[in-house]
Length: 243
Image (cartoon, rainbow, N blue to C red; front, side, top):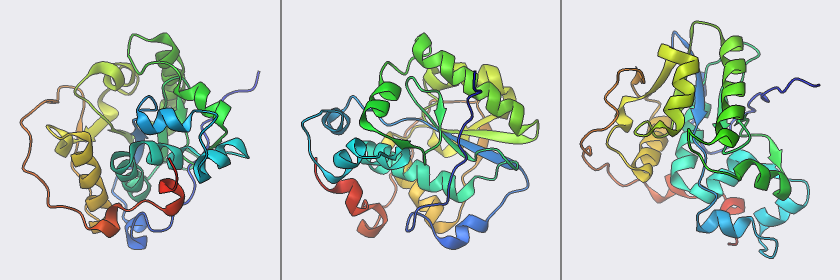
């Protein structure tokens, strides 16, 4: 049987982050895990239907589209912010992916992997729930592979909710104290996190990472961030046309 391997992340998409930000590196190696878009929402449900026509839907039926682009279309600002930030600041060990996306039933997947409509339906089926074996078993399998190849001196940063157990419980048991999250996430909703991540990538300022283990993961809502410029949040035409 062929061993499953997480595909290495590719080059950042044009316009997502400043070119200079790609060269900012910390003293520690770092890999980012991104929570998935909710494919059961309005955009996701429409995209998964056979009858819907749009440029992205047509590509899903004819050769496929990258998972990062698909989830950005479904989720909008939040996933776009996570992906832009992770691409800017990932610094993995050689031969190890710097960015991977958590999926409901497909484990960890590169944001650059192409998916057809049928393949997309397979990996988004099921519930993102720590008690759901269809979600948890492939996630834990891939997380162990990542842990073993990343080594002991690489941080694993979760860009997703830490307020519930759906990501924390499966990942904390594997990565332990190396599992981190941005302290600035506490108290923020999805849209606020997305805006924060886009600003941080644009302004070349990394957030503060703290261990998930023992951290305060719920808190008061922080002060509202200033509104982003329209140019910072506009999707590429292929991501916004149709649906």
